[in-house]
Length: 148
Image 1: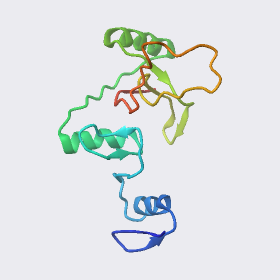
Image 2: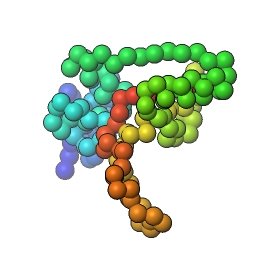
Image 3: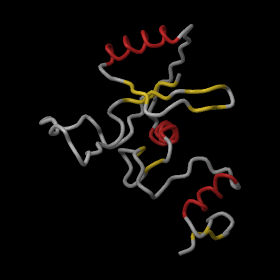
């Protein structure tokens, strides 16, 4: 099955190649994917995004949701961890480091995501049974994020 670009009619053998072409050639950043990603719009059926930032942009533009962005500066890691601990207590949330540091052109970044983001993955060999309350995972991406 071939995938055709709806802008220039060029064909590709994979959906990934088509998406990469649209992003690189046509500079189409806000590509909406048919594949089911965790960054989904709760209001729109079958609408998901590859990146959480694209979902946030979509929610701002299409649904008029105001998602606040807060910029803080810290002198050292201890100061950041103290702020994070206080913020988590006040907001009754928890941020976890899901991946290692990402190298960027302006230095490295660490992404702390809401612990409720993502899907629960059941382990094959469980040493203890699942909690009776179930999991706190929401099977979607929470839009809350802290970048260090």
